[in-house]
Length: 263
Picture 1 (tube, one colour):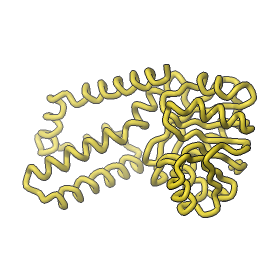
Picture 2 (picture 1 turned 180 degrees about the horizontal axis):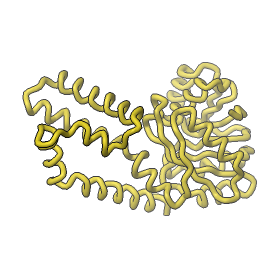
Picture 3 (picture 1 turned 120 degrees about the vertical axis):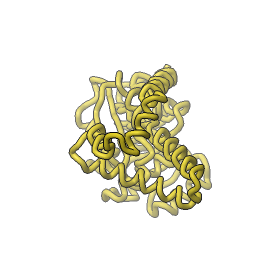
């Protein structure tokens, strides 16, 4: 990994998750600077990561990560470029490479990415894209940063909104299903504590099985669905109530919104 000094603009949940991943991967804390307006958050970050540099404004730097809300991404990119950053990775949703590149100017290479919240436990999934003029070295640098907290896939920018809709927003869909299952378990007479444990372990175990198995999700579903059995009856109800079309429309809505945010 190219462990050059790096400046994060934004030290919220996602920014701090990436910082934790970098430190865990062997990055020197002293080579990491975090720019945060909140003094309380700066103090919290200094406690979380002893040795890092915290600042209220962008200091001279050679590389940066934009981990702020979309509305502040272009301004952050401009500030990093003005401070000397030659490469910038943005994880701000919906903000295009062109917008970021315009803010950065001609002497700063920009990579856009969409990670997700499982990065908080080192199990993230991120899609990245860059302009044709961005060197392979810079793209690899961005991959290594995000690879410290999960897996990374390269996609054309035309598909980054789809990545946002699937893996970026996806944890919320999963948690909504978990919430609904927990409520249903309680409706069937189980205590909230037992219902919570059942659903949490259901998702943990199923996710690990999906991740470790060579079989597709479709086949794994078939494996547990005996003909005319309990699961078959449940699946038939899900199909009859339009689960597949609901998920398809959910993803379409997320793609549309992601595109709107980029305009």
